[in-house]
Image (cartoon, rainbow, N blue to C red):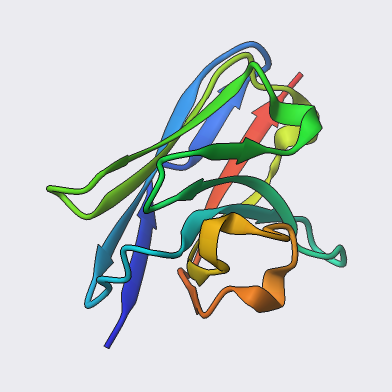
Length: 126
């Protein structure tokens, strides 16, 4: 059974940094896509960043490029999202996702991901 558990969310002032982590258990698909999505109440879940678990190639939504970095530690089965220069508009629930499309094709489509964590809240104050 696949389980994804996020941690590391919290509250920070604008311009600050946070790192969220996602521990994966029961998951061993080395050819698919893992990543981070975020969601505000009443809004659709949106893609933030993904990594191809086979090639290591990363993809980011435009609003976080040059500020966020996604990485993976295969030995620890952990996915990270380092978030720097945070802005109030980054406030959301952040979700880890796995089992996404091979090579992260069409990665922003949430229904292409098979597994989801429970989410961790990130709040950025101005």
